[in-house]
Length: 73
Image 1: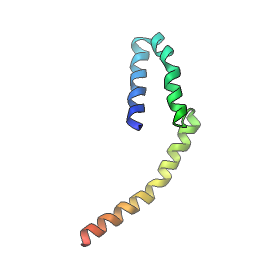
Image 2 (image 1 turned 135 degrees about the vertical axis):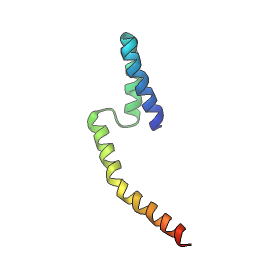
Image 3 (image 1 turned 180 degrees about the vertical axis):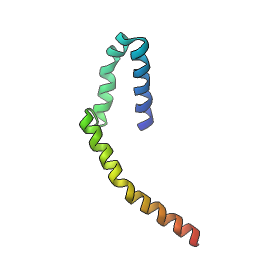
Image 4 (image 1 turned 90 degrees about the vertical axis):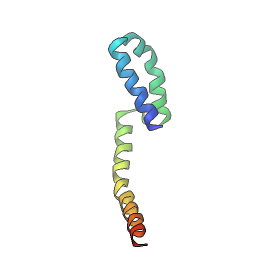
C-alpha cells in the first residue's frame, strides 16, 4: 500500500503544477486515503515514522541472525 500512496501523492504534486483546480477537487479523496491508513496529520505520520525507525534495530538483529545461520550451515 505504501507505493500506491506514494504514487498517488506524486500524481497530486504533478496535478497541482499543471491543473491546480483539478488537484484541489481531488484532494479530499487523497486525504480520505491517508485517514483510512491512520496518517491523516503530520503528527500521525511522524508517529508512524518514529515507530518504524524504533523497530529497525530489531529487524536488523533478525537479519543478522538469519545470515549467520545460513553462513554457518
